[in-house]
Amino acid sequence: MHGTELLGLIAGLFTTIAFVPQVVKIWKSKHAQDVSLAMFAIFSTGVALWIVYGFIIGSLPVILANIVTFALALAVLILKLYFRD
Figure (cartoon, rainbow, N blue to C red):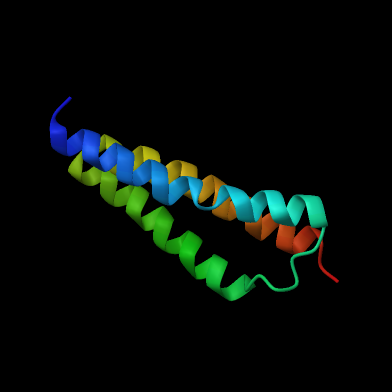
């Protein structure tokens, strides 16, 4: 693995795990009123496009980080809808 790929994986790891506290907070509190549905829908669309881009350029760090980020963002969207007030 090249240094640039390792850097990409580390960067992807940090930007991806940043969503974990939000998912945990929503799950524990069973409250997602303050989460913007529009923002997460737009963000998820952008992340899905990053996944496609990653496949086009053949970049494993881009693909992996964005697949996990997409799953976490999707979890926030689902929890937002599930815990709707």
